[in-house]
Length: 239
Ligand code: SF4
Image 1 (cartoon, rainbow, N blue to C red):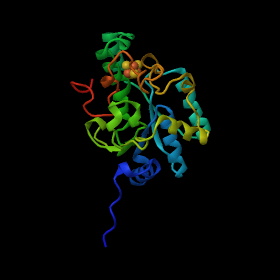
Image 2 (image 1 turned 30 degrees about the vertical axis):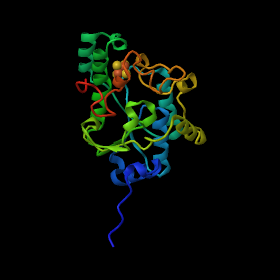
Image 3 (image 1 turned 180 degrees about the horizontal axis):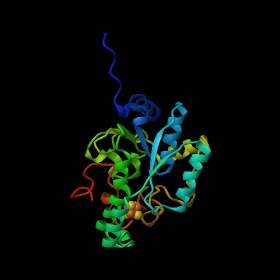
């Protein structure tokens, strides 16, 4: 009798999906870490399987001070060494000469160019040599992410299988997991933030707003992605 086919990824729990991905790819499975509660929960899950996760952090140079503080906490408390990657200086020179430093908070084209140079380019470099990667994205974060697949492989995922084990988790479930395990917790969540990004482009959502409403708040929701989560979210393509 042939072995039973594994269940579809969307029917697996977060730990089942993550374990499967780690067994398949090992150290070539890279965790995109922005030190959000989702990212830290995923690193903890991987560690609980007895593996040392490969993880990278894109230091855009525009993060909150609290993000750098929790980066130190993750290394000190969880013992996880996260690889840091940075924008290419010549690209930064070009985009700053063209757009200046503050247009990103009012002009979508400028902020897309900034995201390309500071976030997407370094992420692409970090994933060179990776065979698959993991993100903390969840479906309830925005209406755009409602169709987020637990596993996707497309040009938007840099052509690599991209796992989103927490796709069907709600914010409260992630926070409860982090509290139960006493994990480092980004200080901005205590100030009402539900999504953490770069300081100039992130605010706490107002009551009743979507979790990511504070990300690039001058934009329409359909535009509110750095670009690496869903295919075709920006009319006209990536920045
Ligand atoms: S989130 Fe804002 S500061 Fe960060 S890379 Fe994008 S535009 Fe630049």
